[in-house]
Image 1 (cartoon, one colour):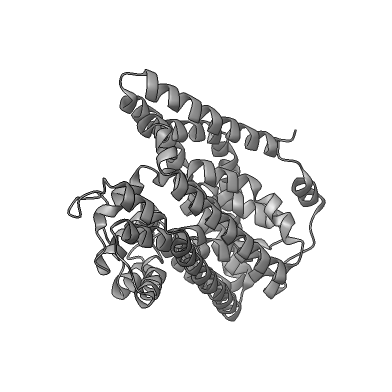
Image 2 (cartoon, one colour):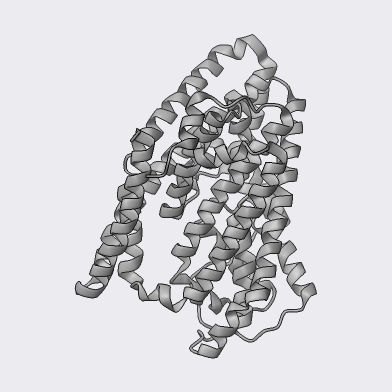
Length: 423
């Protein structure tokens, strides 16, 4: 068993042990909340280690990639193609969520069960959707150091594009600096390998934390809702993979094999950010040139959160159904377009999907207290959303690489990894 498969195995072991230990803590420990708080320290430490890597890794790989392109027109062309794909994928995700929530109507069962939170109850989630003015001003950092300190990926991308384009325009005089930044990128990838060794412990702690706090009963109470949502996730995967195969060909399934580890990591940690370094590595092993992968992938982390998109429409209409509100089709379509805009650039916000939904509910006069129905299971839903975000961005980057002719033949290492059984 190679090192990559060993890590995947230990992550899955951590998941199973986390459920078991969390159940024991919930049923046999006098203070399960205290136990959960202790476990959350481990998860927080791991996610902070990941966030520590993200800013320098995005900056270094993106600057080197753009500098190697050497042509601002090429950067613009690739950016337009990537954004075009992101918009189409987001619309597909939002539409699928809207169709499924109207087909399954999970909120009706919640309404019949009664016990809904009072409409005036506070959800504890700050509704802070972005206006057009907020979004535009949010794009450009007042200081790149501030953007890096806050891990604002979109702001880092904007600065890196300007910096890399300027370095390419300077030419040979900037070559030593680009070589140094390229060296920094390789160092950050090595640091990523060290941090990933802690992933199984973080997975164990994250799951134990949630189960100890809420108990496994929460899964049964919301079982139908969660089953319907995960069916939607699987359908979205099928749609994205089918469209990806149309552009890339059957070889796309090899990419899915290479993205297996970051997808499992995102699922178990409920964080697509945690999978970014491994996703970038998987794309490069698949044959996507570094300069393109380092450019498209970070943009996707702000504009192409397919799993989160589907969840936004699914959850918002679910809450309306639970309170007996029938939303006309025109209102639902308007809501979909609002979500399309308000969600962009929100990836760095904690519990971003809930924040976006909270902002949308208030605009359509749906009780914000309905978010309380989802808070107990949001971690388990976020697992599916995060894994889908990884798959969606991986496929998007591969498709743009194919359009650009920057997808090289698979390497022997890629063939071995893609064919390796999951152990």
